[in-house]
Image (cartoon, rainbow over all chains, first blue to last red; front, side):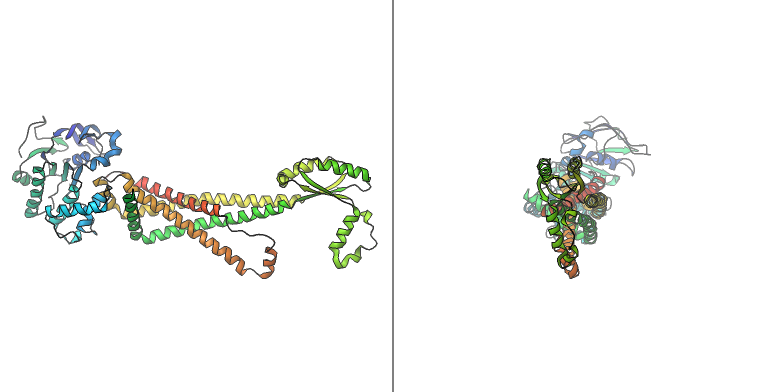
Length: 228
Length: 300
């Protein structure tokens, strides 16, 4: 489902953000990308959803080769990937329903269909009856649930999460991880970037560890399932 | 397709509502730019029309040497009629000329008493074919007429024709130079205002990119905004120009009105109005296109 072969990424006036990254993530797998701040986790995720071009190497996501020649089609890839961020990236002056519906409206779904899908997903994230609430009135955990609902509204086979529990307290983190575990059981491929070792211990899945842009988990030979 | 159009209209409405003042300012500035260009177009249209009316009446007067025998006059008349560009030639004898002069003098024709018609030269009044009624073609005919030795003097208002057509040319040139300058101004203004709009909707655009909105879904509402700004700016300019045109007739003194009654003062023809509106829309589109190229690159 996701493949990276000898991927390098450099930014101007910076050493390697990623250096010789090779990895493979199978369909339905839950994988952590762990490492301290600045280790390259976010860059790796950005490459996976086509926000950055690799300097060299091969990246294949959901069958699409993310090389230069395919980069203009990246929007079609993003419809098959849900993305969740630490800062939620929600439209603050809009309601819960409007935020979730937005992802469908701007990808060409009729309004009626979008409204039905929003009604279906709200109970699943525990926000039934909150469709009309402005997102600024929600707690951080609730806002992250809205962001997850928006990421999932297109029913994507892959979910990328960049420190989604970074700003949440223990209870909210547990709630959000419950949603991710449930998604994993339904067969969604999840790539979850975090620097929280406790989280990995509490919810153990295969972990890819980055340090200064390099893989240091000692499991570079793919196919070996690591435990957190 | 219909849902896409509804989406574009919804986005357009949201963008306009969210940036009402910058949008109104853009429409105003586009209107002023197009108004100045349209005013010069209106002047140019009227001068050209006046030149055409005047050219339709253009005639050449040829004065013959005195004492040319009548049989020779007939021969000259025949030869002149055969020249290229000549539609009709009328012989005016000294007696006809005197009668014309008397009619022009009106109550003061007594001043002409005692003057013999023979002192006036016989002449040919030459009416030109339509395509010869312009400064360039008329000169071709004049050079042919000058080769006939019995023709002593040729008059056709040369200076007036050349000065007036020079004026029409200058106004036309100014119109297009201003048009060129305003073209850049409109593109620059529209582009900058749309950059403000794009900046104010930065979060929304970022999310659109994240969820996989196609470039059409992201960019077309902004193109539509630029086109509509151009259309409204053009429409406003034409409306103001029309009011000024009507006001011109209302507030000019009656003495000038009588004089103006002989000259048709036209408003812009519908096809020129259409082109100005289309031009406004095209410029608005280019402004939004430049803004989109710079600020709507597909990335996060």
